Image (cartoon, rainbow, N blue to C red; front, top):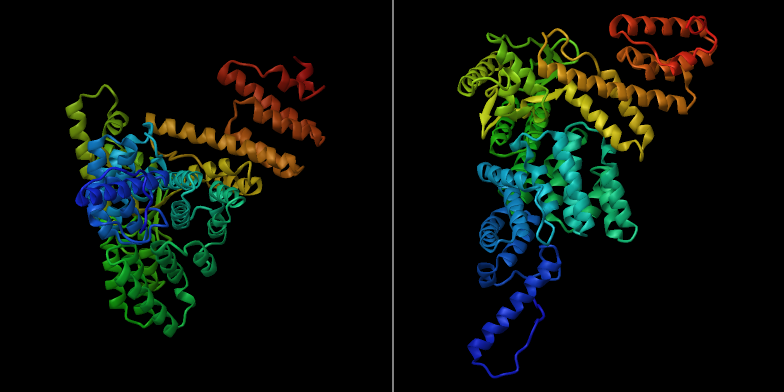
Length: 600
């Protein structure tokens, strides 16, 4: 590696001193290049730096560790990052410190160092609102929170948002490989969570805009649009060894059912050899190998070996394997056990909260937990309806016992409720771990919950909101899916203040969804559809005039005045009897010369 000097000396010096100065000049020049490169290792520097530079310069150590991590050499990268973080902490370089901790946390997740990674991620979560001190570390922080947010109780939606912010931030700083990594992580997580791929429109748009003047970004957009296509992968990940290997492993797993036995064996052996030689410590590539192994054994009729491989894969989850892998493991187990096999205890469950509470596993209904204490059931429902199925201990106490509750007594009652949830969920669902209280946060095991319909509803609406301008047709489809999913939230449960607030919030959201569907149908002159949504909107919000006005306009324009008058008169009585109010003159005028209007 040759790095140009930044200064020169024209006075005589002893040879040893001259060599030391030259070494210092070259190291300082490299540090300047790294600073100009947003902390990343320069591509032109193909040889590793001298060991002395790595031992003296946190900047050089951090940059070279990033290069090692990019290539999947996580074990080599970790001690360099730890050294760099200590150096940045001593020097007070806040931005470099946050970036270093972000990379160290990410490397820890790859290697299974969960406790260390969680500590770093909690620090980053608290620091995200602080200003940076130069080289922008925010995309690195967002990326780390996307990767490890499940340790902090972040929901899938929150993790996706972090990956999106990271991808756009990296692209804005022209950090092409990191932008690709963030975009790819977004795609993997969204597909695992069965979120529409089109929700990545902001990332694709950013990559397309970058590609307009920098063609190297075109493969990024293509990968997001096309998926795990072989040519797209090769084009996108040509220089990123680790992500190319991970993408190929995922593609191979998705193609398992289409491969012949000999081809499957050949492809799997090649991928496994590459992992052992180049990425021996990575949890995700280990999980991919075990899933492939289970499939190969299952296809050969070796059910025992297949189940053993799946058990090994499941054992990686508490070590830091992202929880979305639980679904892949469950699907593989279903194939091994056969379509008639009973669902496994402990497998993820789907929860329906719109209407009467209902749970199912692998498409089969299961009995709801039996509760000995009402507060335990209430805490279970409270956590189910929270993002990430987690909330701070203090908030849980306020919701369950009120803000005026005696702190020590309320805390003891919370512990009793948590213990009861563990018992009830183990008995009903086979969960080894129910509710937990860790680091001041009460949570349910997110990996054991495949889907909660209320959470899915909110996600669909938020994605539809974001796509409204760029992809209005897709946005409308998502609104329709959400509208069909919606229903009264746990109507059979007694009044609870926090639950009533949640009901009101979801009802307001559904009112907005129906309004947007009504207006979209109106723009297309689809009057039957517009009437259906206007009627649903009015029924949902029976004291509000705007949906009634929309429905009255449709009916009067269609010549159905008597029907419009009946609706108006019912609305008028409802306002008078229930609220002591009258409809506005604008609503009355919509009926024109109707009998009801003439009476007033």
